[in-house]
Length: 479
Image 1 (spheres, rainbow, N blue to C red):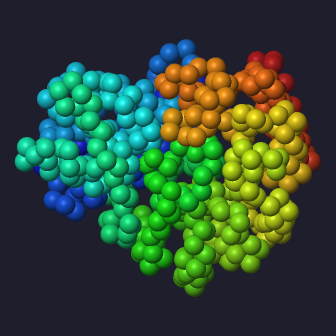
Image 2: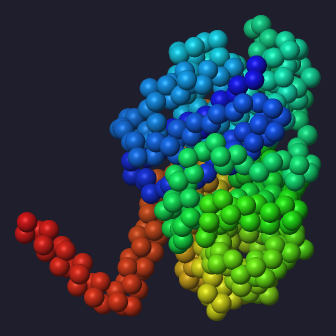
Image 3: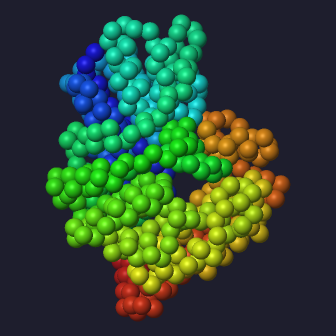
């Protein structure tokens, strides 16, 4: 057993919101490079990224985006893999993983199918109820998948492979928890050579919004998070201990990306890129000294407590043009007692003011609709976002499998649906204080307010835009 095929399945997106672009799938890219470094022949099919232009209706609400089944199976047939791995980042995309497994098994039931990702790590029992899936990897996938392939090759028992779920007769077996990779520098860089890189380096939209320069690329320089936010479901996959790559290792990857692809924008997707201040300063010093004509952004957010005006000025000098602050709520009670994330709002105001002065675009992340939160506290969040005068990004509290939010909401009896398969849907929480539809209307009004404010400001800055819009409207009306 030497040939491993890794698949990033098609994406299912709401017809109402398709303003996104396929990001480089770092998860399977790391697994691919690790397997190659251990002597395996690996092929990757990013069905979403490679077939982004291929969109067809899935049902009344969703579009299926990606390579069609015939294209995928044609590559499977040509490669003839010994085992197939399927990734699944989000619970809301679970259908894509399951349907992909069915496509593979309908094609050839002899090919073992293994799945992994945050959803799988959170609810392996549920995932393994699908008989088209033979194995599930819980947690990080590099070592576990290699050990699984080795065991299957040598017909060895599977009970020694930590972080693995599998069937033994009619029973489901879930082995002990796997220890996380301690030294991330030991992992090889992502297997860029296995991907059609033009699909990613020319992307127009990233997780954080529009991309300003091309070529562009994403990077992950740490794993894990030491915090305990109520809504987070990532602990099952990445753990609660922050593990960082050395600054030398990060710098080496930046230089390779520059050399291979000529990148001019770097998207750092760490949850806590700035937590290790010494490491951050080393990386910033290098970027400033090198003068690489490189700009950077951090769409997964920064650790607010360790940010200062001095650090922000240094980040600006190093090329950071956009940052994201996980403010979460305008209510101190919600931040401290419900989310479990104490933040000093006066410090946030200082940071936002500093960003405005030095020219760093700032987006604030906010979450609404938590059990125990009142309508008045949600209005406080809207007010804080307005007063800060930053780009707001509002999320609805979603009880993802594996999160404390799901357990808490279930205990409180505030879920509209208690089925894990449906709990990752938005607006699944309704309390005695407010109902899901009320929350939907509140958020819609605030988003409209923000949208028209942005339009008004743009017309004030450039009055010709207003007259052009009127002209376009009249022209269209009289056609």
